[in-house]
Length: 106
Image 1 (spheres, rainbow, N blue to C red):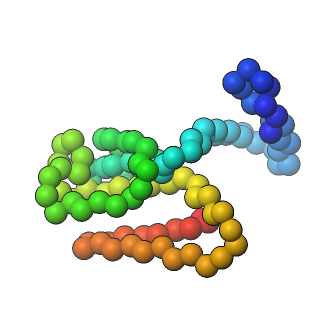
Image 2 (cartoon, rainbow, N blue to C red):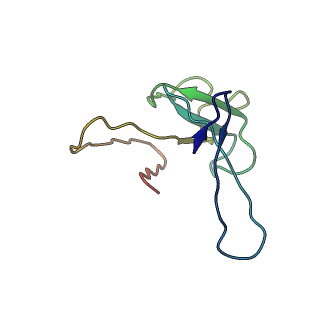
């Protein structure tokens, strides 16, 4: 990837198979994880809210999780990159009363 010096970047990629190709680009910003919230338990449809969060640490026993629901029957999807400053062992903790998945590096 090349920084063009004007706020844009350029890159070249050669597709090795014939057919239609879809390209997707995301801008990563330091300081948080991108969060999407859904008004169902299945992460389906369009998110009803999204934001950058500096940490994932929620207590949803009271109040609304999304603008249109209470504190249950919703789902959230967080994704981003985590900077690890040194080679070491790290532990991620996850706790939920219904279900949860944690995927690191796919």
